[in-house]
Image 1 (tube, rainbow, N blue to C red):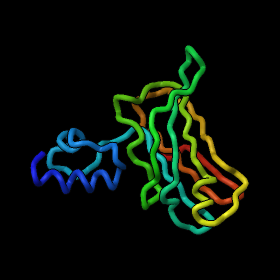
Image 2 (cartoon, rainbow, N blue to C red):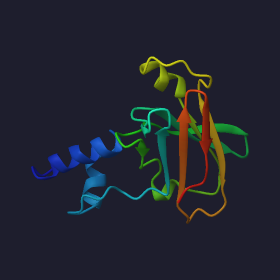
Image 3 (cartoon, one colour):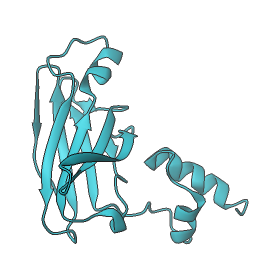
Image 4 (spheres, rainbow, N blue to C red):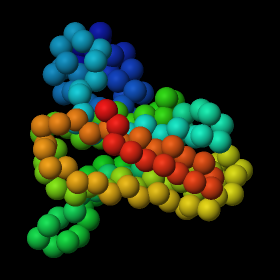
Length: 149
């Protein structure tokens, strides 16, 4: 890895999480843009009006043949409450997906009781060439989700 690439890699890892490798960086050339993911999420803590930073989440896909969930990724929301790089474009295929948010862990770190220990959002991808954005609006006592753009 070139000496100029190391700081860029560190910035990308901070932005997308530790799964970013030098290969991701070299695919981007000189651009600082992270790889474009066909699936993203954004979590807003509506109790505080701030992004939900550090919320643990898991992405899974339902295997049709076995009707079992296969975990594809574990991650955390960044300082803006986003988890932009959930899937590489080559990983997106039609099927049923589940985003599981560890809301209890998030609220516990803030000294807050919650009614929902986790939130699971299950959705279907029928066109694997589209981008999917799954926002979550979260409070200790309620949540809302929708298909974003």
